[in-house]
Image (cartoon, rainbow, N blue to C red; front, side, top):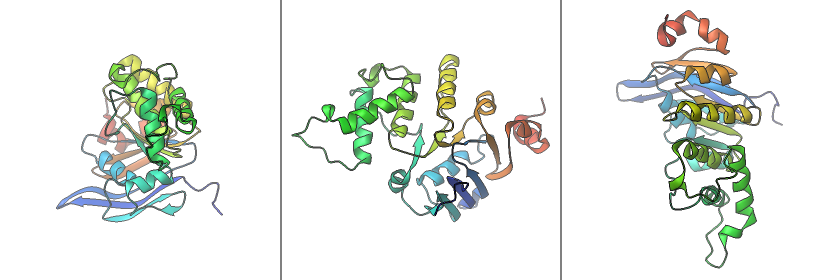
Length: 251
């Protein structure tokens, strides 16, 4: 029986080295049900390497990754996705000549292991279209589903990437720099979208915009040279001397 208080995602003592370079050094953290946990750190701190290990794009040299208490450390990325873990904002390809709804529906189809059938009109299949519409609505694109992706603004494409992740029935979302490349208004919109998702998913957020981090995060882990130096609520992170020295700066 699963403990209701057990973390949705747990990282235990991960280590990853590339030759003599230790990119991740004894990294541990947890993300609880409904929690938005932010991961911050200066450039080169190892954030992307850590997220890539959690998502299954690379395996750690040692340590464990648990999803709902299940050890997924050696599972490939597609099996982690099937188990409920989705990485957003690192979508390898959006299909510009298809509509936004088509892109999400194809992700739903791939996740359900349905084979493409020439005799079946996928654009009218409610088992694909309804989850796609629901995911688009969650990210504010309900009225843009029939637009081709190539005609969407950059910020809308970021929203679409999030919709694809949400369509996969994930319970844990890895949000990899969702504000990257967005203008001020687009960033505020994305912030509002993520705020609306809080409580529904366990989310691990990597983000450089500290105003966004401190506005959204329930807890923050600070990573420096691949090692977490502090985890706490935003106010604790702001005031922690080692964090101020290593990342935020005394000014």
